Image (cartoon, rainbow over the protein chains, first blue to last red):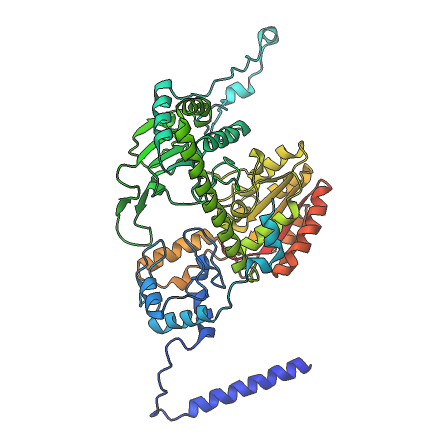
Length: 132
Length: 429
């Protein structure tokens, strides 16, 4: 019951925000959103644009030679975008028609926001794999 | 079964099947003695020429395809590699259990051949794809570029060349080999090893030892890279295929185990992490991209393993299972011990990837690639499916931390001599 009441409260809050937006004056366009500012949207787009097919939902990578780790890219956004548009390897090329710059920059922001990979030595099971 | 192996169809017409044999003729009938055919080995001249090339090479690669037909084939390839201290490479489709996965001379799957001065391809049907780069199917164009250095030599030993007049062929693209030997590789290896041994001088042996040390350093580093990549997706949900393989290995490593499924669709993680040493430990790639092969092949291999008391492990793709799911009943009916762990990425994932490639190539919306390929809405309930066919079902396992306990429960069931299925919700690859 408490949960239902909280959900109802949230719905009312969302409705109020939406209603407020609807009443905002049309002559004052919102400032353009800074590029790469929305990693949460980037996470959604990473899946929607099928990046996770090869690179995994956390950008962890898996497939040899095809789906390397892409989480926490070291390269700049410009370099990242150049590669996505015109990859040199086996990767699918994503044009701006398919994947607009704003969306790509959010994906970049998502990948940059991911935590560092855990060191192997922190995972006992992987340590046991070294033993034969 | 005589090399070259291949599909065989035996046709007995209806009359032959249904007509009775007159009683008077029955005493004359006999089953002919089975003639064992010697596999075709290479001629001595070709072996001598190849041995000279191998001993003289600075940086050779032994590129293994369908080499080890039998356990002897594995032992022979190890002997050749160790004699020359030459690295062994396999492509991303690992056709047979050719070489111990953690041998110091075993390079990581898919290691480039580009820096080799001699490539010896042993029964590999796809050599061209590793000696050449081609425009990938997701781009326009048909560019082909040789990857090997100028002057690098290519030698092939392949019984597939003996198939070129049959109806069904697995010839691959034409290879401009410097020496093409149409013979069975396993049958040729003993003569090749002896021919090499005769040519190796003390100076060459010292050089080989240095080379072996360099290769061992590289392969140790490649193994560490695999561990690091497995760690990278360790806590991911859905469960990463690297973690799936690692957790599975941790629980079977002390058993006499056998992986009765292909590993390509789980990014070859078992082959990258586990310690494969014996011929029966891997069933090998099916040889095609057909679906529906995996589950029946696994049950067949598990049946063969049963009398040896081996633990059969099947990492089962979800799309593949639904082409012949009744094979689960076969396993139940015949009491075939088999651990089936679902690689349940809830899709025909290979097809999704391909459709994405094609959509992007045509500048179209890639987000619709799941249409017809996602196995969702509703998700398939594999646990109920297993139970419907009379085998135990565990799961679905959605959280990586739940995987080890689920596998422990499942292994208890298999050790009692029964089949079991664990449904694991996994990453795409």
